[in-house]
Amino acid sequence: MTFPTLYLSHGAPPLADDPIWPGELARWSASLTRPEAILMVSAHWEDAPIAVSSTTGAPLVYDFWGFPEHYYQVRYDAPPAPALAESVVAMLSTPATSVQRVESRGLDHGAYVPLVEMYPDAEIPVLQLSLPTLDPSRLFDIGRRLAPLREDDVLIVGSGFTTHNLRLAVWGDTAGAAPGWSQEFDAWAAEAMAAGDIEALLRFASSAPSAALAHPRTEHWAPLYVALGAAHATKGAMSAQSVIDGFWYGLSKRSWQLG
Image (cartoon, rainbow, N blue to C red; front, side):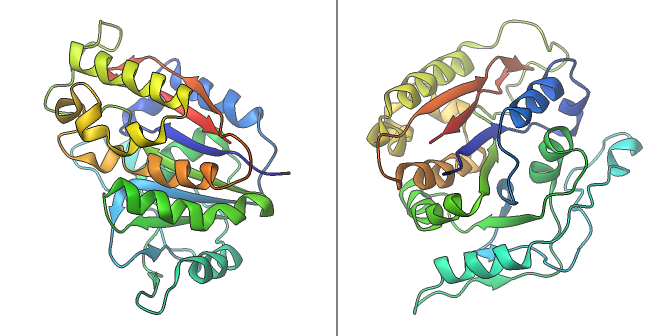
């Protein structure tokens, strides 16, 4: 079988305490065939040239500050994925660019926070891949080169947030109406993904309404393009199913299953 790819909105660590989101992720993973390995591309690791995380069991990266202590006690001891790392290195290496092996780098919260909810037993090997750029076209190409992993029962997951502007988030109001800029971008993204409009998605900065407000910096939208490229590279028309929608403090947590 050919595995789907995912783009999910992972949120900050407190999203794990939301009364809805953990169950949505759990039901999503239960609907999928169990993967042999998971390749995570998180908004929270930018490194160039492109890099892969530890295959020897480095500790989690608690890459956030000022939260209650229990968020720093979370563990996710997934097995390392050395075979997947070898495959990724082979697929992405070129004569001009090598792939870094960063054995000191563990999974950051963009990777482990959703995985705790989706695969709580931590039995599936996990590898994280860095974002070497925020350019949609280049990330889309990286995804296309990784597409053969889908035939090897690898689940490719882009982890970001469909809208991400912490300065304009509606703090203190998880259930209130989302601001207009967040609703506008979310509606555009849902429509473009459903239509499979790759060109519009690649040009989101100029084609999406409120793009600059939804993503003043685009690292949380960038992981979509790796998942999108991997899904689009296979034969047949790409399908995009919006699995999770809604807002959290005014930010869109819409998430898709592709392929």
